Amino acid sequence: MLHLNPKLLAWLWLLLAIITEVLGSSFLKLAQNMSYGFLVTAFFICVSYYFIGLSIKRISVSVAYAMWEVLGVICIVLIGIWYFDENLALVQYAGIACAIAGIMLINFGEIDSSEHTTPSIKALAILAAGLLGIVALAWACSLVNSALFGFFLVCAAAVLDVVANLLLKASNGFSKLGYGLGAVGVVIGAFYLLMLALDSMELAVAYSSWGAIGIIGTIAGGRILFGERLNAIGYVGVVLVIAAVGLLHEIV
Image 1 (cartoon, rainbow, N blue to C red):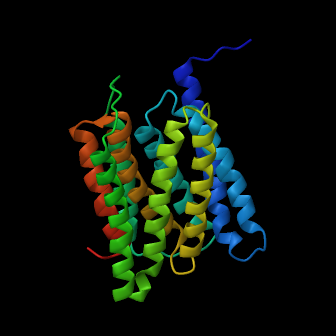
Image 2 (image 1 turned 135 degrees about the vertical axis):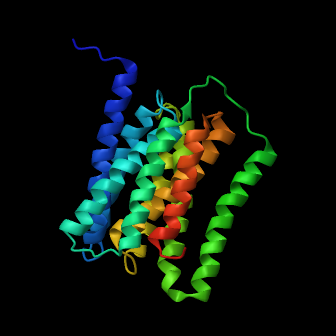
């Protein structure tokens, strides 16, 4: 019987998570015009989250999510251009490239640590306030400019995604089933909001923005809840990801 190295097996689970997540995300565009189309997306996302839940038993949630997103962004952009005939401005291509570079730097910038912190109420409050602040800011922007309502939906979806990622990490590979099922339920809600955003945004732009915001929140949550850290290179990646959000929406 074949026995794989646990770390290698974790990366295999992550690869399967990426493949099924790209399938689910690609179906979002088609789901808008199909009665039960979103159920197909939800199925693939549930499978993907199960695989990523297994992978983060050996890989930090920040790095696993970053890799999940960087390969997902590349695939979704290509699918959006080739299959859905989406047209992006040059500055938006620059934003996507910036997001990919930032995500890769975040991956390289992980610091191995056995530290496990117990989050304080103050730290949890700061994290919650930050996530709610993102949604509030996006909502305010949508009130000023109705064209940004899709961006508000993307931000709300990203916040739900961050919550789902942290619940998934807490589930310890679904060994704590309540956390695992909670993560799946929340991430399905995130993808539903992402689907609604596609009424006013291209799939490639919506997905890249959602992933960029989700990565920032997941890194913050991983640091506060699980003691996961980045070095200077990783934080350069964080800055690039933040810049990418502005470029993707041509607001900087």
